[in-house]
Length: 349
Image (cartoon, rainbow, N blue to C red):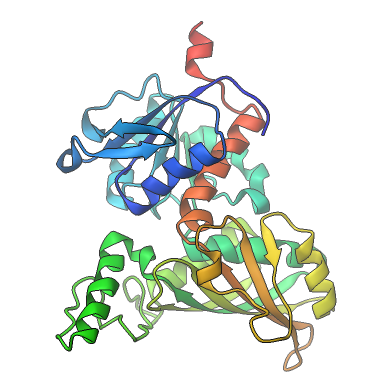
C-alpha cells in the first residue's frame, strides 16, 4: 500500500466478532491511522478491545461526533446502520457498512476490491460504501476472472456456512449444544431454528414468498450488482456445525468453452485466490485451513459435461475476514491508494 498521512478511523460495533476482526486486520495490514476509535452501544460502555499492542476503551456510538473522523467501519447491524450511516456520512466521514442495509441502494457502491474496485468512485453521493454478504464476497472473487475469460450464463451454488455468520450467539450455541450432546443433556436451540450440533440446517435468514430465503436472495441480487446483471444465479444456503469459514459448491455454465486446466491457470494468477487442487486424499481446502487466512481457496476444479461449457469447483474462505472485516479494510485501502479521500486533519492544517 502507498504511504499516506494518518487517518482517524472509527469502528462501530467494535465488541462484536467482525468489529474485533476489523481492529486486528487494520493493525496487521499497517493501515495508515493517526487514531482508531472503538464504538459500541451504551450497554458495552467501558468494554475494552485490542488494536495491535494497544487497548481501546469503547465509546458510545449515539453520543459520538464524527466531524473529525475520516472513515467509519460500520459493523453494528442493519437497523443501526439505517439510522446512523446517513448521519455519519453527512458529517463528511465515509461509512463502509458491513450490513445489508445499503447494498441494494443504487446510490451506494457495493464493492469487492478484487472484482469491481472502479465502482467505488460513486461513494460521494451518500458517503456510504456497502460490503457484500459474506457468502457473496468469496463467490464473486472466484467468478470474476472466469467471467472475464468465458462469460458466465448461469451459476448454481450450495453453501455450507459456519455459525460465526450468525454472530457470537451462533458460536456459543454450537459450543453449548456440542457439550450437551457429550454429557447426554438436552441441547437447547435459541439462535437457530433446529439443533446445529451434529446437524445441518437448510435455512439462513427469513423465508420469502417464492420459497427462497433472504440469504439466498442476497447472493442472487449482489452477484448481479457486483459482477454482471445478466448472470442468472440460484442458491441454497445451509448452516453447518463449523465455527469459522464458509464453503461453497459452485456449478457454472459459460457462453464460451473453458477447460478445467484453463480455469485453474486463470484463477492461479488472480488476486485474492489460492488454488489447492490435487486429485488425491487431502488435496483440497476445508474451512479449518481457511480460518485466519485472507485468501479465497479454490479446489476440486472439474469440467461438468452435463451442460455445454460447464465447470464445477469448491470454494472456501474465512467469513469473518474476506466475508466481512478484511473486505471492509480493503475498501478503505482503495479509498486511500486512489487518493479519493484525504485526512481531515491534513485539510485543516
